[in-house]
Amino acid sequence: MWRCLLLLPWVLCAEISVLYLSWYDDPTTTMTVQWHTIADEYGDEISIQYPNGEWLSWQGEHVQVAAFLIHKVSLVDLEPDTEYSFRIGHDPQIYRFSTAPKTLEDPLRFVVGGDIYDNIKLFRRMSQTVLEHNPRFIVLSGDIAFSLSPHPFRTSAMKRWISFLKDWKHLMISKNGTVIPFLMIPGPHDIAPDHYELFFSLFAFPKKQLYRTVNFGNYLTLFLLDTGNFQPIEGCQTLWLEKELSSHTHVPYSFAVYHESAYPSHGPYYDIIPKKIRTYWAPLFEKYRLIAAFEHHNHAFKRTYPIKANQIDPDGIVYISNGGWGSNYHTAKDLWYLEKKQRKGSVLLVELHPQKALVETIDLLNQSMDQVTFYPIKK
Ligand SMILES: [Fe+2]
Image (tube, rainbow, N blue to C red; front, side, top):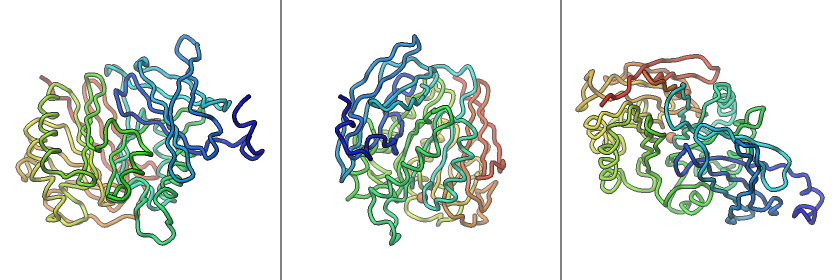
């Protein structure tokens, strides 16, 4: 007998209110499906429909955090660039997801945004715009749920994460049930020493560290970096970054994504985090020819001139974004390194083609604020 038939009537038809997909392994052949329940209404199992039409079951696991069961199923050995349908337990609702392509033959679109669930009204409007672009995946680039913000009405970090994830499910699933997977790198409002366990219980990471490299076949590498929220910028992370950058110089498109900024549009240029990023990471970006760096936390759009050795140089690195998916806006300052700036929230729409990458900045009303083209590294 189905598990929920034994439960209270109000549970019988309860819709899953929290469901999110992410990757902690190869995005071309894996997917991690997570959902929350209170009374274990659906068990830990999901059914997947394969391209040949066959449905197969996958068994997962769960952990309990406060009153919530956080379920997780890690799917492996999937086909690249393929759409799969899935159901959770006996829930009749059918969802869909797609794996990433192994090679870049058709344009691949993804979104990068940070400072997300602060002003909820702005978040919802921007999310609607993001969904209209139908990205293959989204990089949540820190200060995601603002679970650690000192607002008096935010009674607990877990409640704030649940609130964000419910909104995420409600907003970021298309009409045909397609769920957009995310990659994430937290910011200072997401993770703190007394919340490490909560964070790593909620989200799937390959190991208990935030920084990592994500490879999309042979065409795209994302270096997701931790600007000191769990591990320091300098030391092990910088050593790791050099090793990773040096072993990916053959990849046509490589971007770094992190939360705080080397070149802030609003915050202090001489603050400790910006100084550390410029000291430890920027020389490596330059040495190993990163395409661009996406950085956030300032809530005011910016695009820098290309910068090398902390000077404007056509052979340098461009730093773009500065957060504001759903945060109140700040004023961008007049600074020597800013080629473009605007007091507006935004996200980045990145579209990769075999011959070029288009990075467009859009506001919450889907107005284009900036466009820049990058060309693949050729070896
Ligand atoms: Fe931030």
